[in-house]
Amino acid sequence: VQDKKVLEKTNTSNKNGKAQQEPQEKLDTNPPKGTRDFYPEDMRLRTWLFDQWREVAKTYGFSEYDAPVLESESLYTRKAGEEVTQQLYNFVDKGDRAVALRPEMTPSLARMVMAKKGGLNLPLKWFSIPQCWRYERMTRGRRREHFQWNMDIWGVSGEEADAELLSAMVTFFRNVGLTSDDVGIKINSRLVIGEVLTELGIPPEKFAATCVLVDKLEKVPLDAIQGDLEELGLDRSVVEKLTQVLTVKSVDGIKEVLGEESQAVQQIKKLLHLCQAYGIDDWIIFDASVVRGLAYYTGVVFEAFDRKGVLRAIAGGGRYDKLLETFGGDPTPAAGFGFGDAVIVELLKERELLPSFESTGIDTVVFAMGEGTHPAAINVAKCLREAGQSVDLVLENKKAKWAFKHADRLGAKFCAIIGSEEYANNEVAIKNLRLGEQTTVPVDNLSTWARESKLP
Ligand SMILES: Nc1ccc(Br)nc1
Picture 1 (tube, rainbow, N blue to C red):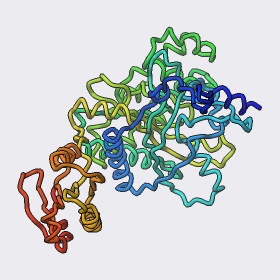
Picture 2: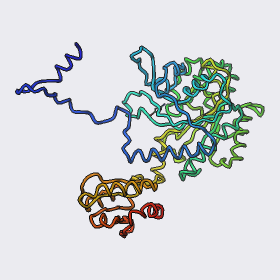
Picture 3: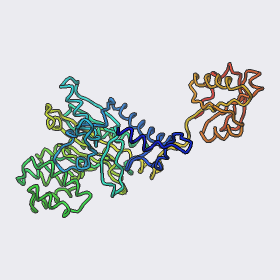
Picture 4: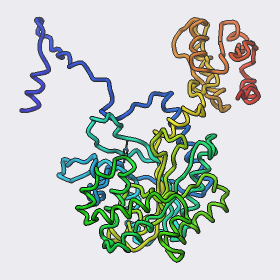
């Protein structure tokens, strides 16, 4: 009945009794709020970035994995007040299941590891480039999706894993032309806050939520979260001590606060030593205020930033040794980072380090100019494609002027013309669009020509 009503509503008959569709409301051609379309040129930039990420992951021996963008909401029901769980893109599906578009990849990774019940050979070095989502009131007009390069090492408890991840991140920065004058990576350990809170008599169960609140201090003044800290049982004297420790910017300074025997101090010193071995120490800076906003970090944390201080964090990560246990799994050490696609592109644009993505990468435009020569053009396109070229075959009868303009718009290197004369001689006229020179090539020599005419 419902369908019939809908049909009646949209199908009306005109005066001749012919059924006609009512014009739809004007289509909103924008993508959904907070999301992006990737037209071919945008897609070439995205593909370039993902290729850079994949190349580093491969160099470091990481394997790619993936998981559904849709997950059970229960994967993210942490109660630590994190932005990432408060802005969940969640809904109830037609099967009455509480689901969510993943806001991050790490919980999916943990679910996949748990699913194998110890059947995976550790250590795991896995990477993924998932699209991640948040549902934020559009008041701030921020995006609701981004792609985030995830690199994770499971099964290694030592700072060797954290250092390997930092080195991989630096390798990416170097590969795209950034230097340690452009970007730094702040490192810290959550053990610093842990040892301070323990000394002040704050129970461990308050630790994660305190870190989440402290992370907000980067964005909001202390009095904006004072109430939340007090609700956690942290009185003013505790908060004062905490904020004083967070201002420490040197290992010696933190050693004075926590003592030489502090596990946090030992951890930070070892990590910095390993970074020297990688030759990345000029990228690394100790900063006790870095805690990151995810509740599950347990040790080393780090955050890449632009040295000019204009942009938001470029990437961030840390150690999360207890995540699997929170899901009911066996204790398994893990560390990783997330690296979003937005800030890095802003930085590369600002530093003029992005290649041009105007050209389609097409080698040759092939077009039939003479009457009845399209089958010959098909054969030329076939030969060039089989020789490894990227070929745009013009599919309609066009004038040469249109074809040359079309080839220029595509950024093609050559234009192959099959006119009546060439057709009669089983030849092809080939114009080098970079040099403006034209040659005639026998069809039987096209493969050789294609291989010899490799242009950058
Ligand atoms: N977690 C998250 C998801 C989507 C965006 Br945009 N930013 C952060």
